Length: 160
Image (cartoon, rainbow, N blue to C red; front, side, top):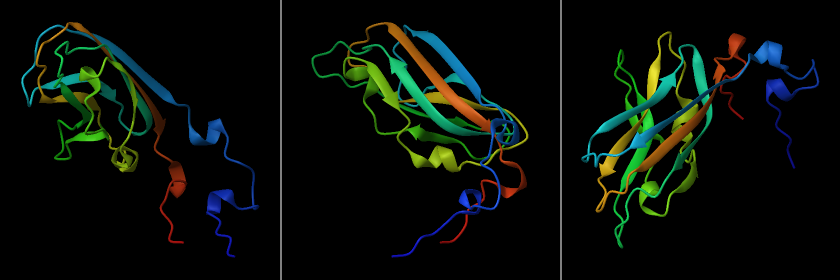
C-alpha cells in the first residue's frame, strides 16, 4: 500500500495558519423574489471579490412555486463582466430548489472550486432555467465563503 503526500501535508514545516493562508471573506445576501422571472433571466446576488477563490456556498430559499407540480429551477453560478468566463451553474446546478418546499442547498459542483482568482470583482448570480408554474413570493438568500488566492503555489495542483 502506497502513501502519497501533498507538499503542504509533509512533515517539513508547521501546519498552515490563518495569517499565512489569509482571512476568509464571507458574502451574505438576501433578496425578495416577487416577480416571476423568465427562463434565461440573471439575478445578481453578491460579488465574488478580486483576488479570491470560492471555497463554499449555500443557497437558502423559500417555496417560490406553489403549483402542485412545481417547475421553478434556478442555477447558481459566476458572472464575469470583464472576461469571457461566465459559468451560470458552476456553484449549484440541476436543482429544482425553489419548487420543492424551499430549503437549503449546498454547493454541489466542483467547478467553482477550480475557478482561478482574477484581479477584478465578479458576481455570484442565479440564472432562471425554468420559471415558476405558480409564483409564490418569498426570499432567496446566499452565503459564499472566499479565501484569498494562495500565495507561492500553496494551492497548486500536483500529480500523484
